[in-house]
Length: 138
Image 1 (cartoon, rainbow, N blue to C red):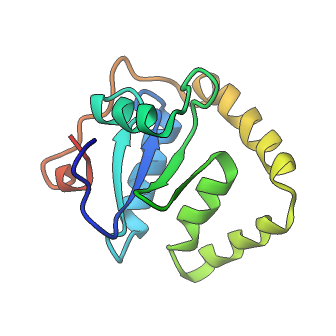
Image 2: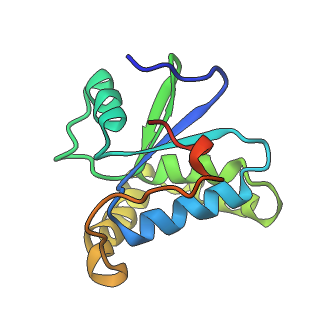
């Protein structure tokens, strides 16, 4: 497996999706406690983690929040758990946990299905700027 610093949570994301890349930049902005590291699902590191977790990316091509040796979450649950760390008005997003996960994921899947059409797609994964490089797993 890969060497992941202790007490970090890994966000796996679609590296060619414009919406996903913009979301990663937003997480970095609000991650005041430096909790998260990132890797694209398409990267070698992302593939190793997916293989370790036995997740078929053909079935789950969405956000995955992975806390090594603890657990992982996908789709709406992962997104809500990430936003929980932001504080401020972002805490209001936790309200959505009262909705059944299946219902939340129907909405999540609808957005995910249309994300390339609505927000566009890159030819290759995002290359982080030098100042953001420390936030990404190689």
